[in-house]
Image (cartoon, rainbow, N blue to C red; front, side, top):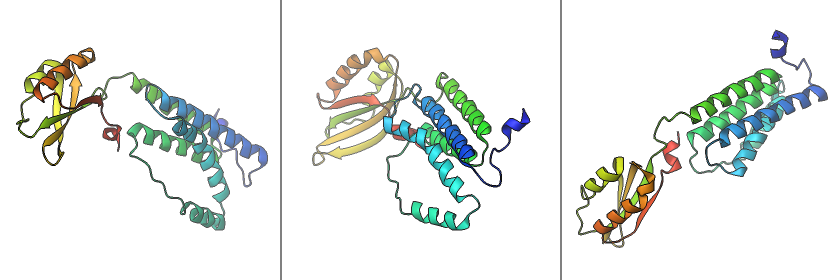
Length: 222
């Protein structure tokens, strides 16, 4: 049994051992992608990236292993790449690190350890997805009010009736200062009462614009 967790790469790597490491990396990527997509919204491009990332890392590290010149060349090639993206969710960042760790383990020949580690971490992710922790139920409420309205405390009675908690997180002037845009994070008591909740807010803000949506993903960013 202990031999199962030994490296399959000796002093030199052959075609068979490389393909086996590559296959192990792809399997780890598929498991990670399925775990990352479970009970959360994500894009197809991100899932494809998670599947291919371990294989790419495995191949790069295999080429660099034991060769200083190749390592410098690869580092120079990757330094030409600039990554620009919107802030990611903490879960997405964990998935990326998991995929990279699996790729590194496969590059060292520890395919069994990479697969076992990936399965265990993904299993923990799936278990935690069923546990209600944190502020996943928070929603974002945006209310536009006229400048004549003293908005501080104006909606407290409505919030007390329809929300478990609320917090004013942002205030912004617009339309040459004639309007204020208020941004709240709230947790609804009953989401089925959203229309009634918004209707009562409209009576207070002069029937100006109101929007209610899920909390921004940026709140989950590391």
